[in-house]
Figure 1 (cartoon, one colour):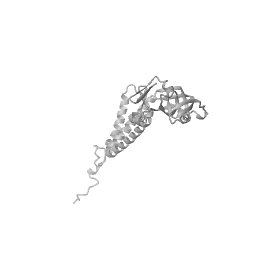
Figure 2: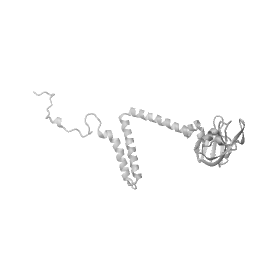
Figure 3: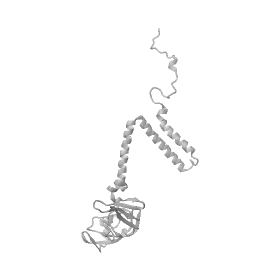
Length: 251
């Protein structure tokens, strides 16, 4: 009598070849199901390149294009595989990266002054548009401008009552002008009374699209907390205007 649980090693059932439907054994996913999102984009990129009539592999641009497209296909398909294999974790990772990139974009906007928020938090950076640069008024109705003076950033306050560009001793030193070697003989009337400044010529001043050379200026050693952007700068522009608390300068 044969035991019903006993299976002979010569039983044909034990030597049946594996099914070709999924290409895998057990319950695990098949190779095609796991990697089709990697294979399909790479093949599609290769076919697209082959169909382009003027594409050539001989130049550096052709090789660079192939590299960039294949890299994009592999990274993108790898992301799809990750999302399909573990959607919850993938979405958490994507959300984390979105937050990080958002913080970086916000920091860039504040630092450069681009965008509405950047303008509000850093008004001295200005906003370039249509060949001009604009600055919003501060809470005290002043206009602050960050100008490159001899290649160094200097913060100015607009003062149409000042005949010259006025530099504090600190800002002059930052711009490469030694205030200790100047002669302070030119009188100026400031908010703190009569003061004396030293006449200088600034080799270069740049502000967005505005590039000026050999700008007349003065350095005041004491009694001034903020450098002033005066008429020796403004008179060199084609135009400037104040409208709706927005200062706009035109090269």
